[in-house]
Image 1 (cartoon, protein in one colour):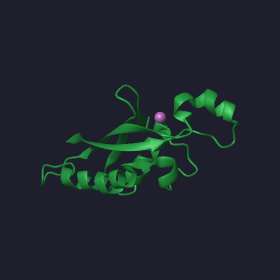
Image 2 (image 1 turned 60 degrees about the vertical axis):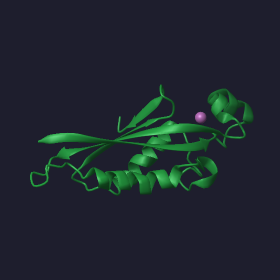
Image 3 (image 1 turned 45 degrees about the horizontal axis):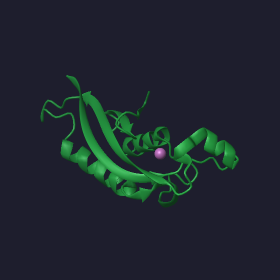
Amino acid sequence: MRIAVFRKAHFNAAHRLYNPNWSEEKNAAVFGLCNNHNYHGHNYELEVKVSGEVDPETGYLIDLKILKDLIREKIELRFDHKNLNLDTEEFKELIPTAENICYVIWNILRSNLDDKYDLSVRLYETPRNFVEYPA
Ligand code: NI
């Protein structure tokens, strides 16, 4: 039986959207409020979807404790209460849009999850704005 398991998580982080190759004017025009010089925070909500075949011996797809700990150790501890631009290696060069954050999270989880699972990640930057990878 193929099935999907979900785990929700949450972190608060600050960011600023800024392309160093552009003028101040172009950055302000393209990124608007998210270009604010002094950064601003978001309450990011994360939904991680793992799918695959149920193990007939356990009845589990994946032990949710393992998924919970993985998200906590690899994502929450890395990004929670951080300034994504200043405090993280991942966004030193990469603009911390919801799209890029979602992709980075997917990559980190993917490299820590058995290949037998399919993985997708949804990231809410606000209750109404969210992105999903893979698309
Ligand atoms: Ni923002």
